[in-house]
Image (cartoon, rainbow, N blue to C red; front, side, top):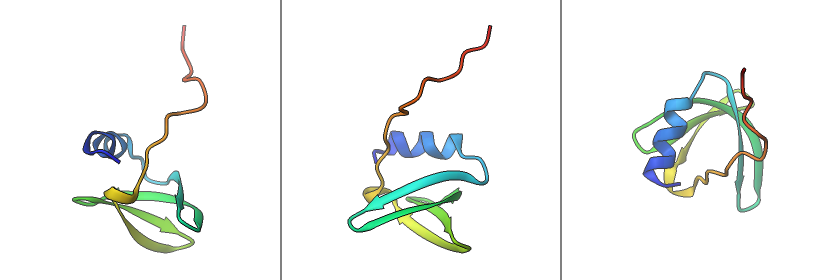
Length: 69
């Protein structure tokens, strides 16, 4: 994840936002708790885990953003 993507994720963070983690053999779903200096703090099944920015990937949304008239 680039620094720009990381900054965007941290700015848009809301307590309890769901995140999906896929890294090597891991496929986990957790809640974004916060952002450290260079890592995400993620709660997975009641345990907080630090995920370094370097191994995180940001994928574009696959659904349309809602528009309001």
